Length: 224
Image (cartoon, rainbow, N blue to C red):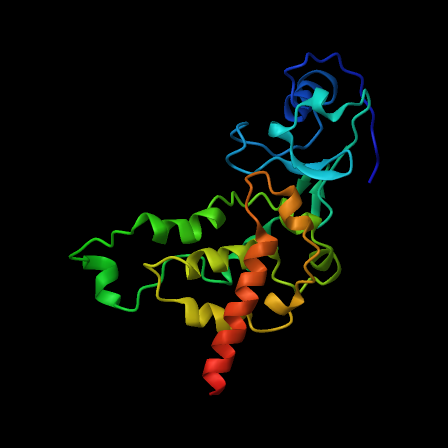
């Protein structure tokens, strides 16, 4: 990939994303960058800034403490162009763990006659893992995902646990069986880099370790 350099005068409120948009609007209209909400909600503007996966819209340029800022695409996802990566495989891995509430009663899905209230303690079980915005930074930081394309990745695994912990869900057995493999939970080497880069404070490394315990318990019970 060809590197380019630009000079900008920025104020202390500028983010990396706003700087890139200045470049696109005034210096290089060919620059490809993906973004949407500009508020750290959509997860679209993930990229590598000064060697660390970050959201460009949440990264203040002055917080980096350097007059020179290096920006590049995430390396854990196939590159499309400039700073834009292909997320098809990422979303395939996400969907492979059934990241939705599963109910065994088919009729209930279309004509439920009751609500399913939760206590605060039940909500507290899964809420720490529910703030994932699917930005892909955790996958980009994961050394296993970067060396083993078959590994489902920390994002998908943490979301599998999120739904397994939800008291309304009835699909945990299927998820645990799906992930009881080397490309699932057992591929994780607990580097912890996924948790360090999450912009929303989700802890995928912890989620995967808890999921390993659940998978082992489920497999033991199945064997017995």
